[in-house]
Image 1 (tube, rainbow over the protein chains, first blue to last red):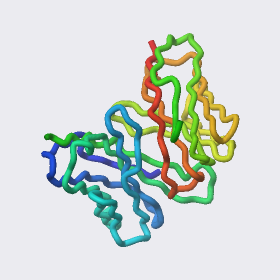
Image 2: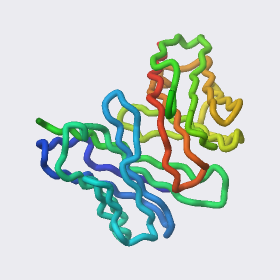
Image 3: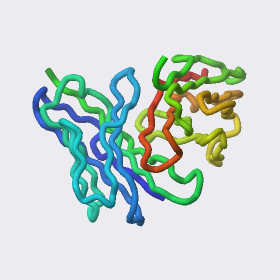
Image 4: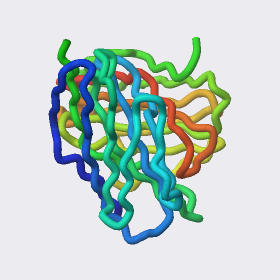
Length: 118
Length: 114
């Protein structure tokens, strides 16, 4: 079974600074997908960024980028020029494509609560 | 209404009550999901429907019963719940039931079982 570990339950950073959230996962498969989801306080969870394991290039979405280290099974999220609106729970997630219906599920980590300090 | 909506947003029920959670997606997606979110625990996938076909999750107690009458609506029927079932229940949808697809989440129903 796949597992996702987020070792930082809480983090805080000053506005405009850069912060990195860590995520490690465990799988014996070679092809899979990784995601970062953001859940702001009292708001809906949304996708921040995703990465296909077969792509060596790190995904980037504006101020958000990942450092994907496949051999180390590490998938960290970097937020540059952090803003107050980045305050949220961040969940790392893993998904494995299979041919079996019902097995292509997202496996989530426990989340990191990020607070941006004005 | 746009996106994924859930009603009610908050629910308090006794252990002998029967209630239902409702989810509706306005995105034209073919897959819908129920998740349970408890504090300090990973999101737990409870049920998946794809084109109204249900995937069984053997680890979900039978006191939770899903229903998907069409591709836009998903229900979670609750009966004889336990206090440990108190949690945030999230509904989500995606274009297809596939590993790569982005999931769109609703705001959740905060359930408290007394």
